[in-house]
Length: 593
Image (cartoon, rainbow, N blue to C red):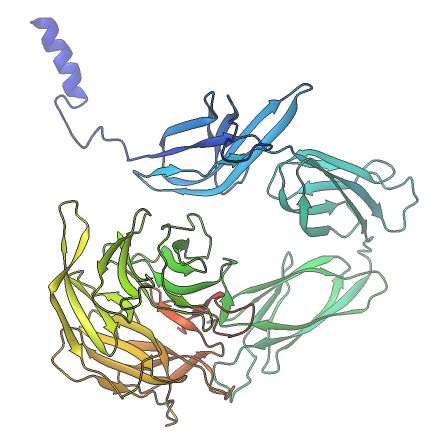
């Protein structure tokens, strides 16, 4: 009895008895997949047994830590359990054959969420490649080119040149890299988009220019700020900094800048102004014999292209603002992060999400307020009922059909309370309540489906560019019955009142008919919209009050598929330039503070 009391007393010192919260581990993720040899093809791929697998932590930045190693089974399959949520690179390597040849493969940017089971597509292992070349020193003899350091950015790989300037980096994973060449007394040389090919050697030749710190030159240029107001043309207030120095100035209305007496060297400029995107101009070299270096005209923009490389036809922020859902050119629903990085590109398979590839406009996406599901319009292709409303889990998986009762569905939009959604079914704006099935999935209660706003001017509706519900109980939408927009309209989410025509009017009293793709600010105090005018002084994206007053242009670039971010700091949109390679390109515009 005494012994028991002592043991229990010790346990009590640490919290004797069950404590369900104290020892709970955070939910983790599981990763599964297959490692395959490079020479095999379906339907009989050959797995790589005992391939070594690691998960690199930190966006492929070496030396930031890794999980593993893990090893593939005899068929090349693997299961990696208990992975903390985060972003990883999955790396596989093994030496195969006689003599042994190293094979390597990498899957970049696995964004693993808590509780997720991720299946990685088959990873093909390939032989590494080699980079080699000559780095000459300007003014040096053929045997005086030693000592230049050669770096491969994003890795720990570095080497140096011999007396002839020769260098080599072997055992490199295939991919696209940037290289940096450095030697004291010479201007750094950076080469971008250097490709390493699997099993091949690529050669690169470069020359480093000498520095003369006793000599100086002037650095001049001009900054042009994208005009929000076409009448101003004021390019003042831009802070221009020569990075790595204390030299900073602010531009005057003309936008010109000049830095005198800079030592000859390699420089970068940083340009900043409120409500525009900061821009860096790199690799500015002041060379021997140069007294004035003109950096040219540099533009600061209120909008910019996000780094997706995708062409998309719908955009919608998640409720927490960390992700953006999109419809891609294959008709699938995917997700990118807020910066345009695509970690888990496709959520669906065979969704047939509806869009018009000619105009670059989709038929709509909408996240549920709890962030778990995404509504979209499917194209079934049946003669009488070609379109349906579908829903897919935001973490990916099988999509389901919610409504099939119409032939021209557009723009489903969840209500902020999550109790239903609005949608356009030609020629009316409608609303339907939702319920949950036994598995907790959203279902549409067809008995509640009703018209909340009657048809607008007569004519066949050719496109509906937006339907969006606000926390105030208002719905905003836009449609066209010809090639041009009929304008922007507002209605009550629960119906009962005729829709209101919202005509944008500038602070100077100019009416702007033909607005489209409206989107509410997070507080529903303003509406943003696009104007695709033939007049360049009017074309762009605008903000206005709910009644249309105070319409003010915030960027000169018009767009499709506008969507306000939940923090109210930006709007994402797609490029509307029909007939160009930029159609569907993803952009963002800053909201003026």
